Length: 297
Image: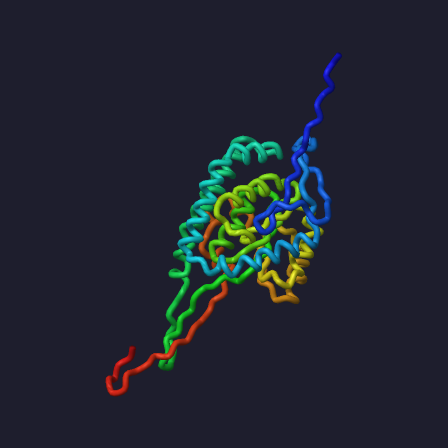
């Protein structure tokens, strides 16, 4: 009597919202295939309700995250890098399953870790670099200081499923923002596994939320959501990018399309990317004088 061949159990990669791993509210999923066209896993097909839940979680987390010191945010980013270092084999296997060579997969993971370390170092320094004391023609001190925008919607690129997510997330949360990231539709496995890293790396619930699903469907809901302050993407096609801009114009969203060609180079990381997602707060403070002293304090 011959033993029947065993059917493989495909993992369903869940979404990441508010520090939890729910299944999509719609109950839908879609197959993830390898380079040979064979199904290797299932991913959640997120719905509009999932987008709303993710934005709500990000908004709730923003106040606490923004009020943390830059030094503490840097500690947490460094901790993410430490935890990612310990998951290199799993992430490498997932990238290779979706068509990467071992060399390219290793390079992307190492660059991802290095990029987290880079932004960890900037968390408590960018404000000192970009703040200023401004000259004014009155008896006042005038200070300009960068502050976070709030909730940022981010669309991951197709050519770097792990590095793209981290290159979007790191400058965003380094500057005190929270985010909703839509992973690459065809290669989302590493992005969801990265969510498992975030879950165990001291990142407060809701600071980073990761969805999977059909980009064409979800992009409209993200770009029209009125509680998202900015949209960032890498390699959207011109017609898609034009539609995103039109959708966001009614809510006065900030729109950024970063250069995907710089992802694997030094230009893929910069304190100016942190500053893209900052607003400048200017404060006036009167100079008080002591009567009869002729001086100020």
